[in-house]
Image (tube, rainbow, N blue to C red):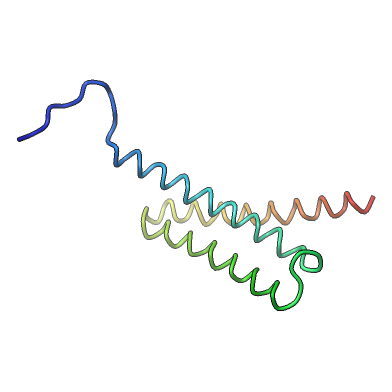
Length: 106
């Protein structure tokens, strides 16, 4: 038996869950991309030696794994958008690190 339609205007709960998942996935990818960009420039202070290289590699792997999940779960359009946003976030992290390093030298 079919359920009667709800007239309250609520949308499908699965669509709402899907939207939350997309937002969380892309925002976590952006955060990891920015951290990766910040860490790659601050090798001497933050992560030095083999442990720093391993930490940087793990951040990169997590970041691109999240991009892969976006490709797999939501298709190539959102996957490409997420990939571009990762590159932008990484460059923003690099830029912020350079800015704060120059500012502290003054």
